[in-house]
Image (cartoon, rainbow, N blue to C red; front, side, top):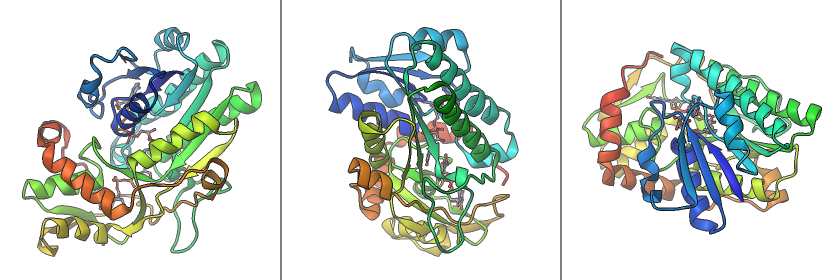
Length: 328
Ligand code: NAD
Ligand code: DAU
């Protein structure tokens, strides 16, 4: 197994590379990452003497580089993206470039270099949002609401088009909200945990009633591992943690861990176009591939809180350097 992993210095990609190299002794990985503000090669410093791992700093939009690397591998696992909704509200140029044009560049290179196996990592946000009832599944129509989700939807459509038109052997997965180690502290869970450690309040958008379906990052990566090994070509798999919770209740769970209460919550103006609820029906991947999440939400949250407590050297400089007051 020779993989080209894109975006492997980001949150989910780093955890994926660690999972694969730990599990498979015959797996070789080239990690192509531009090292944007969200990429951190230190996440993989434990691999510096591992001969199965190679890091290449570069852009997935760079045709020449992508063509050169794709010749050396058999499977592409494509994580690289601009991933933060709030940033896409402020300025979406990089979202369109990386998420749409970058994916297109990879698809063309995969096709021209012997139809390489292509797994595309996408999001449940492409489906829009839900009211109080129902769940997203592989049959849900696309209805993206932010420039982030619209650019991810565009990339999903391109991936499917290369399957239908050119028989490129693709699979797609649409996953719900991930959490765990190495998540950039602009996302809700790590922002809340690190704020509390720093003695700051947790910012809650609107009334905190919006709902997300959380999945521990290793459960997502195990699903991707199964899809690249036994997924049906041309198919899409929805992946979710079956752990729905309102943002305010999640903030209170985190506060409870620190023996704090509502005095550490700050209600702030709502995100523009804030999707109300996401939830995933994962029946297909469970039935067809035998996947199921191994982490219980509360246990995963505790593990994550402890990781951020122990790894302040990892997140403190990132927070100081990058997070400005992102306007919603
Ligand atoms: P992240 O923002 O933590 O990491 C993205 C990585 O991509 C970074 O290392 C960055 O340097 C790299 N990158 C960005 N632009 C690049 C470019 N042009 N060329 C090469 N590398 C580039 O993102 P994440 O949260 O790990 O998400 C990874 C993927 O999973 C994304 O495609 C995202 O849409 C999808 N996803 C994320 C979640 C979630 O909850 N985080 C849920 C479902 C799907
Ligand atoms: O659903 C999958 C998606 O999950 C991924 O595709 C995205 O890449 C990932 O960023 C995530 O998107 P969300 O917008 O749902 O995640 P975020 O952590 O930004 O916000 C989670 C919820 O918390 C959301 O309802 C907004 C709210 N929130 C967020 C922040 C940063 C707050 O109330 N306060 C905050 O400060």
